[in-house]
Image (cartoon, rainbow, N blue to C red; front, side, top):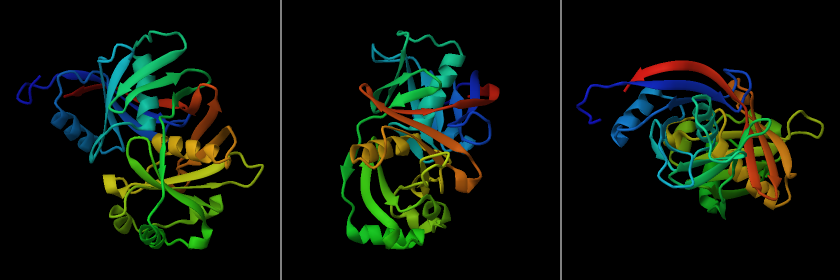
Length: 283
């Protein structure tokens, strides 16, 4: 289809990711068949939905992949993202997709092949995470934009599994939840994630927030790629157990839950997916 052709009806879903109850996670728009759509048309539709991410399912190119996905924010295309990976896989399976293997689904995206597995919930294998130190001057600008006392910070690093995220490990979940960021200031500084432990005996182990005004999202309700980076960072440095549950979205009235597990096959980021909208779009 060229840009001048009449749009055609395409199956479409909106799902809520990292929650078993709709309206408490991170919404995702999924066009079931993006064949024939140009990058410009996909980007325009993603701007129109105005969700944190919109995805387009496509036939795979790589012979090992079950399907291919392109992922867009209102600000542009991403090489990988976590909640679109879980949500897109859920929609692909619900719409009749049949994986080549009984126990694994393989998604193709710009970053490469991403394995997923089914169990109590879908989980994707966290891609490799690079870790780099943070420039001290930039770090203090981030503290100021967050209104944060530096004494509350236990560590900081640039983490990346597709695009860089500046992540701060803080002293407590209460500190994370109390933040009132200056999003205009953060927009010039990059994408910033924060994480801290809950007290022992809590229903969840960590509290997470993600501020991404740089890509048009002041605060993301639940962020799979960030949690994948955090999981690798914290488990690798013995600051988290090999199995834990993180909460995200609390400050926004959401109740996202990210289920992390490391085993001999990798680090897995799992979450429930709740259906919200099914129909067609003219595109």
